[in-house]
Length: 388
Image (tube, rainbow, N blue to C red; front, side):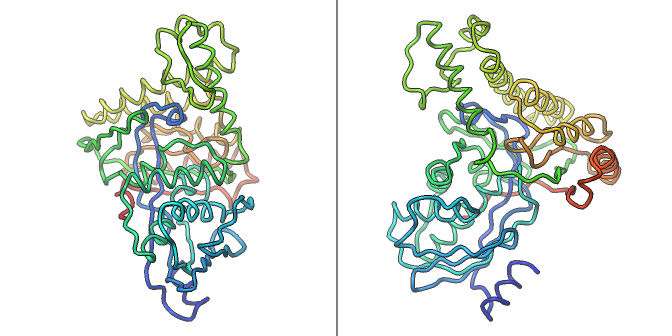
């Protein structure tokens, strides 16, 4: 039963509209958007749907096909603090919108995600799809960057995840068959058309779901900031508060000169930032040339740095990554998203999709037979970002 059928089953009538936001992958630029680095991104042709109708009494009432419990609150009485459930993303989004615009009309809706949770920025997609729906029923017209920053603020301020803006930018700004090349420091971006051989995006779910609020995601950001603050201090350069310091503030020459004075974990986080930033730049150049061999190699290198320097991943995800490296027809791949659980993504040759899916699944489940029935693989294509 999909979102439309479930809505009709609950309410005895058809939903008046459907809001949609795609998932995203970031082949290069992993873990550096919150340090104001450069990223590469693609929106996918799968995502979050919300079937909905307006409620004139101001009540917001939503159910998810992916999570238990109904979310219910009034647009004028949004809880001040999170409850620790999936609906925090909705409450945070409604709070951000209500602080900018008067809200009088609520909505009833059913949310459906077309892929398992973890690694494709489903949280940002839920927020953006919901923001779009709530704005529409209240006759509010949202602009792209307004949506991006509100969605980011909902996660930062309400949910408690200190994410950067990569996810939201990919899900709003991307266009089909184009790579989003974004500088997170000044928000300048380029949509680079693909002119090389055909490719698709394979998604391999480990069978382990995760939430960023319960992972080491925020800790890694603090380690990056600590590395930046120490490097600036060693070099005698000015610096501000801890919360506003990031590695993009630190010239590479300063990192090279003082990196050996950093604690080992801080040094590794900084090493990932500088090498990943460089890979994102090289990747954009390779994409412009239609050079998937080079681009894919850079993505594999990014995956290795995420394991060795950023130290994310779990045994299952690392096993998936190792299998992908040995599979013919995969140009490049890495963890997707925060990379503590969730999934891996890969850029693949469409002519070899069947063999790729068979080999990766067989090898992975041989190592982790207990995940039979939870592991899954999916093939996607690039797509447009959300239409506001």
